[in-house]
Image (cartoon, rainbow, N blue to C red; front, top):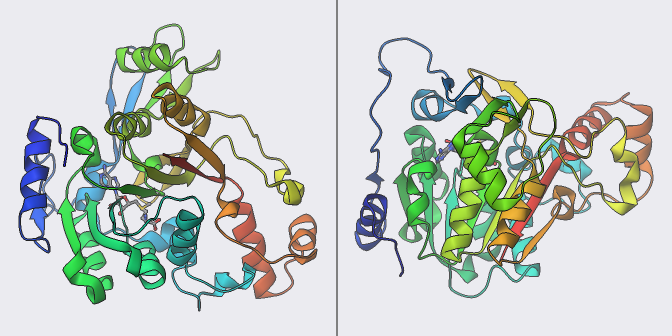
Length: 351
Ligand SMILES: C[S@@+](CC[C@H](N)C(=O)[O-])C[C@H]1O[C@@H](n2cnc3c(N)ncnc32)[C@H](O)[C@@H]1O
């Protein structure tokens, strides 16, 4: 196992060599708010250079009781094959099982794979993946900032508990330690990571300036937001040589050839935008920037629409519902809502 020599790495190494089902609390951050104070934990913005600000959801994820249903994550929409959203699928299946199938097709899930999932939410993805492809998985590390969600993941994954290690930590702080596993999965998490907002392209803060220069990232002429946390995560994964699958709500979506109708009113080449959620904001991800980082490190970066992972029903019915907004039944409403949401999601596989 190769781990860089820094504090996070030493701590992670300790965890990895400790009893494997041990739940370690790696929490090196100073506590900025008291969870018992009755105050709502909020996402915060910190001023950096000039007008730019750093948007971070760290306190929110550390202290808030997180309700993923209010965030409408794709993973929870297909948390099991009985979910009403599965009406859109050719064969009802859980999201985790579909991710597992995709990883096998991409050559990323081989025999005796050790996986690290960052931000596993309710544990639904890993549950579906282990139920469908558990025979290929040797061990799973679940890293999450939220203690409440880590506990929920452990409950959900209890059938495989001897193979699960839960680690409480902030992925921003563990970037130097992303090594020693065969595959990272980061599903619908990058939008929560640090984002520099309100950047004036002619007076960029040093972090933005460095990323833009190092990777030759395109930027607009007007004020913009930059996914610094996601870019640093991809940079760390690439430097460590670890394969990864990352998905998120994108601002530069890819439309499947056979579903061109989904492009209606969509900007396919935009920059990260804010999505306001309960007590915090996420930012959409510019995947073309992540691809540039991965390729600059000499890695193979494959990317596409999340619909590549989710085999939806064939035939004209979905198109008709989407085009006509023909929502005269609850099933139609679900289909319209889901297509409208899912069409902006992308995946990136780094190998
Ligand atoms: C939007 S939820 C997605 C959950 C799940 N992957 C899904 O798709 O339903 C984001 C997850 O990432 C975790 N998270 C957010 N920021 C994090 C950070 N900086 N480090 C580690 N985990 C983080 C949250 O606690 C939560 O589990």
